[in-house]
Image (cartoon, rainbow, N blue to C red; front, side, top):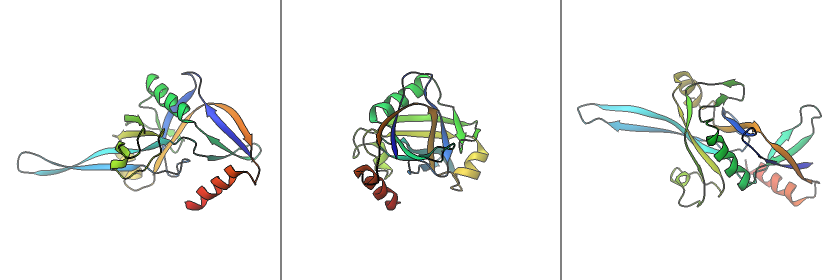
Length: 193
């Protein structure tokens, strides 16, 4: 089985959009943030922030892929450096409003409002929300202004996380065998979920 590292060289490559999906390939769900806001006058008004937050990419996380032409299984992963570079290039290319639903259709009314790389697992903002993420993880918050998307997909739990879309360079790092320690590590991860 192949192990392939995905890398980025320039702005034409890299992350093109963030997709809201039911089953994120990185196997990590986002959380939806809401807020109760008290107005100064007489009424208490409940307003939702309509923000979803979670990991977009996790470093060295093996992601199973299947080649549609050959049905061959292989794993891909992103290094910390590629994730940082990808996150920076995504913003430099002004793709904050590039979002899709289940990688199928582009959606309007969704915008990246926060982006950061986890540096310290205990002091990171993600820890405040009970999300333990390893250093090098790209965390994002998206504002969902589209009413139908918020009501029909986010609030109902039809979408649970993020998945990135983009163009990358494949660098095969190894040909994995069933006895390879990395395969044992992957099997351990798969049995934890």
